[in-house]
Image 1 (tube, rainbow, N blue to C red):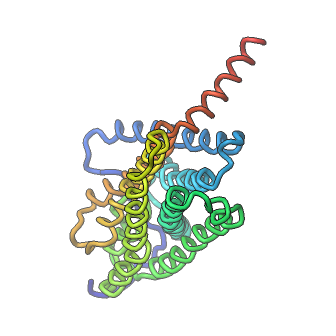
Image 2: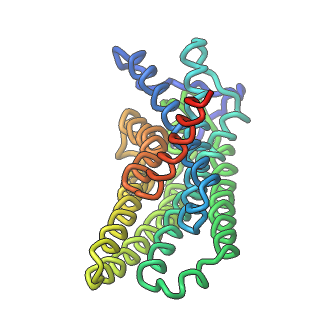
Length: 315
């Protein structure tokens, strides 16, 4: 874009979710239900992992970190969207906008790293089970969590500083339901080609490389599973790994489209649709995918529900 006179006002205007959609109110109420389901699902998963001793393993520790990320990710966008919709206001202050960008990238980056480390955990568990307890011990698990969160924060800090220092000329209306980097780039009066190139390189580091490492891990796992003599062990390994692959596909697939292709290739509606999938649907689906396809989690849930029913009958 050509540079011009930067506007004096500091507030941004969020156009909202699909502003041209006829029955957007129905979609808003559906998203409220999805948000509640995501919060309940992830909190339930966290509670089960915390209370059930059988789930005190590296895999479930990493899964608890994923639930924390998902809870924070959906809570960084949906509440503000709801407040704007029901209050009729569309403005968002510059600090609030920067905060949304920071949390979005920090949590998104943390999730990319976390999904990669979860694949490594499964690789060690399936391909090197005798040394699993030594390789992926409690200290290593804590280091994995620290690396995930720290990596996301470092990525986010760089993106937030650059994005929030872009000069905005003319309209400050962001065609999105939250402050998102590609949408802000479109209203900047600065040539964003160099920054788009940086985003592409960052995408290789946080999307393509993790995806490659995850696929490599699962190729080794697949060949190991094929040589397993126990059908029960084979089925358990496949169920756990397939759940993780589904989550990876749901999260990294849309990210490739949004951040690894030029912004001119997307319409605002397409960007919003992808963002809804990544930031709203995926946090709701993750606990369902891991719980419904995981025997240990299902048994832990049945145990908690059984205790609750017994207690209720006794009273």
